[in-house]
Length: 199
Image (cartoon, rainbow, N blue to C red; front, side, top):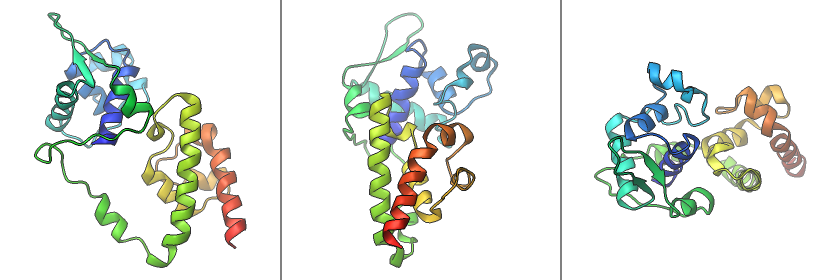
């Protein structure tokens, strides 16, 4: 649950710790609720970042984070959710977090990795680690969680496509114009260097 937890905690921070569970869930799921739009929450980078999760699944995760004291809920008539000092470990120090299997859904990632072509794994794995290192450095410099730069799935797609130009990078899953302009140059330089060293 580490990555989902990072997304939830990051969303709470970007919402300035002013809202309750329902609003947090609505923002994470990309709700077009008039209140969300009126408050401008659809402009947050975490808006819709967990759109494939059900409301129940997200509520379970938020409640779990509260129970483990990574989040806290105020006792006001309109309870607000805030982060605690414990959350910094997950967000910025790479600490992992386990959640009971009964609540957490099975992840499809395992099946996806088994379908990767075996001959390409050594090269892809080497480049993947280089890309992860670069992502970590950029994230640390900006004070944001690594997944907010690019997800692991995006880095794997970079390994498969090996883009050489900004246009080719835009074809990579998870790379939009904003991220291409913000991070593209550094990642493209690393990929080109890797290709030169392996050709």
